[in-house]
Image 1 (spheres, rainbow, N blue to C red):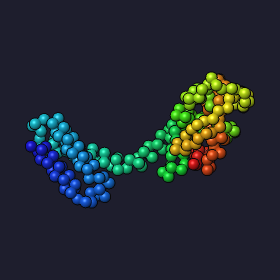
Image 2 (tube, rainbow, N blue to C red):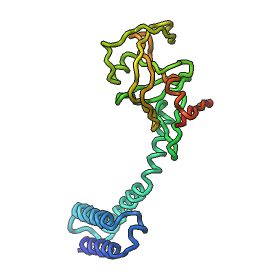
Image 3 (cartoon, one colour):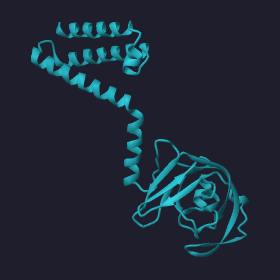
Image 4 (cartoon, rainbow, N blue to C red):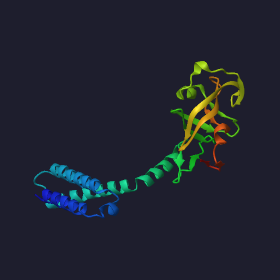
Amino acid sequence: MMLFIGMALIVSVALAFLVSADVGALIGLEQHQFGQLVMLVAVLVLVAGGSFGRRMRFKEMFSGAILWVGIFGLAFVGYSFRTELEQYGTRFLSEFNPGSAYVSADGDTVRFRRSMGGSFLVAGDVNGGTVKFVFDTGATSVVLTVDDAKRAGIDLEKLRYNVPVSTANGEAKAAFVKIERIQVGNIERRNIDAFVAQAGRLDTSLLGMSFLQTLTSYTVTKDALELRD
């Protein structure tokens, strides 16, 4: 009986809010969205109440109601601050997973943490394929491994390895390609000159100057790399 009274109270409060012209400004939701939210809470209370049994004592029912109110409150706060929570979550991930991008609130700066090996790993997207680069100002161009070129949808059969390049493994031959689209964080560039190194001559793709020179600036500190659109 108390359960249904509680539901009636929730619906009544919802209706009172819905007839108010200020409800949208009060909680940041449109009226129909708020109504749907309250009805969802009522259904959750009903389901939770049914699991307690018909002979539930008032104290147990009250505790259960408080629990569901708390769950609803956390969900509402999470929804209200979803943008901020997403930004902090991305930053937390970038701290513990080098290569993951942390995009600033204004969207103009992408930040990366230094890896355990001392280099800066940069997770990117090349023609829709996921590629992990090493930040390298010494490379005059973006250089892809054969595997990453394949992920980027580049036709390996048409490549001509006739350009000499220097890699960590020594001198090698590379094939010139044009990257249709490359994205790092929220920074996107199109028609970027690049090379594909011969198989086995490059361990990790290089994020070189053909991409870096299109940026407003980039900054390297002791533990962080910042790219500015």
